[in-house]
Image 1 (cartoon, helix red, strand yellow):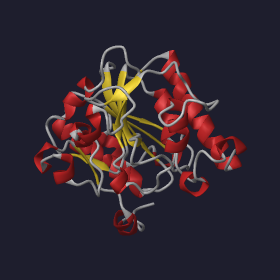
Image 2 (tube, helix red, strand yellow):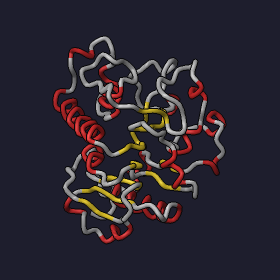
Image 3 (cartoon, rainbow, N blue to C red):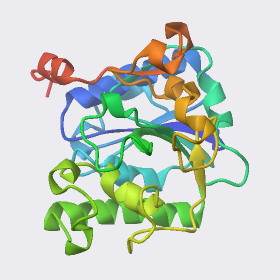
Length: 265
């Protein structure tokens, strides 16, 4: 298995997400056959028959819907493309994703389209922020510590719910349950005054420029990054994206969860 570039998936907590990850891996094998696909999952699902599609299967994950934060730090690849499991690869341009990060940068992300966002804790008229469902990141001690801290900060937020330091800065109810909230604090994308902020991490938008993304920057109306993380609810006309340009397409929704609620255990 090559170690320079590869895809990392995580499937935990809800068995249909393992089935979804297997389907995603199958689509990646079709369009990016030269790149390995590995999955992190719970021990009880390691031997699932459908896991033959993966190049490697790793257990040890907790039954958490945010276990991906724990998995990210263990990637064997020099350059990793993380994808949420409820996605599918639909374009032969998939291998080009690894060219979406610029030399000298630690991470690259796509932007949340606020018109399709489930929750917002930033000024959506003045700022766009990273979407946690897909990213590129390089392997380094610095990045391993970042991923470790993302998981630890998420656990802290789950246990403690809120910290007075966020009073007046962020809306309490909007931040509940979202792993992207600690991520944004760590990246300093909204403010750079939080103790979790990691100024040592250098990141940019996939196939785009450096943050921030405001109405004054070129990235504000650019839809290139959306092709790599196309979320249900995105508007092709608004993004200037043709359907046949989309590479990774999300299909998670309440309908998906209802449809697979009785999936195999």
